[in-house]
Image (cartoon, rainbow, N blue to C red):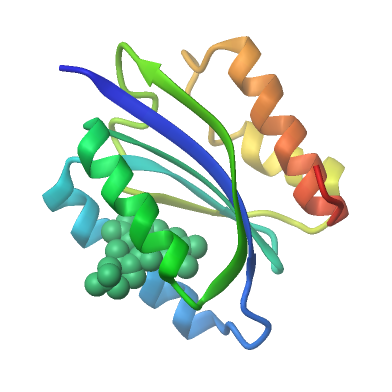
Amino acid sequence: MQLKSVTYTSLAALDLDEEQLREIHGAARDLNGIDGISGLLVFNGTHFLQWIEGPPESVDELIERLRRDPRHSGFEIRDERMLERRMFGDWTMKLVRVRSNFHLAQDDVALQLPEEFPDHLRARVMGMVERISEDVEL
Ligand SMILES: Cc1cc2nc3c(=O)[nH]c(=O)nc-3n(C[C@H](O)[C@H](O)[C@H](O)COP(=O)(O)O)c2cc1C
């Protein structure tokens, strides 16, 4: 089966609280289980970075829903690729809260990436974590 992955970053709505974050995560897991999507959602207190993987059609439909979601803004796709196999097959959506300091955030994320996660993608995700932590435009 063809699989696609998309990684994006966005800025959380200013008033997003803990309860809403839990709601987003819970709904994401339920819907992703139905849609065959798995992935990783990183939140550093202000920004999201999300890796989504699954059947291309499901991924594209989710991206459209995410673009319309008012709970975040500044939606920007950072990476898009076809995959031979899932990187986060065990997770319908794993939420990783990272510390806002980027060195610490990178440690937090590094611990969660699967061992087989390719080095070049690891470097890319780490670079994105660094940038969302610094809150600068790519
Ligand atoms: C940061 C963030 C991550 C999200 N992740 C997912 C996800 O992985 N899967 C999903 O179905 N919806 C996710 N959502 C919710 C979607 O934006 C959308 O509300 C949901 O899919 C339901 O679609 P609908 O609002 O058009 O009914 C996320 C929302 C936000 C703000």
